[in-house]
Length: 100
Image (tube, rainbow, N blue to C red; front, side, top):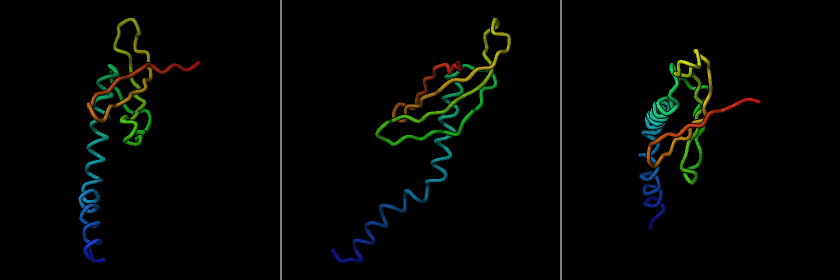
């Protein structure tokens, strides 16, 4: 292969990813937030942190979600949950965060 052909081939591999990366990242962040808010079960759920993006070898991203517990006996108490979002299955799981 000539040097020009190699450069053209490498550019063809890189350009599609660069062209959609901002939109793709924004869509991913929105998808993760929606899944994590739903998984938390909180009223008025919102992100407490920015999305923590892990390497693809991990397969998960993380988000800390805060909101109000929906149970009547909790009387509007606020809480936080750690949410792990599975990039392959596009599902979220949460666990309560406690401060001691």
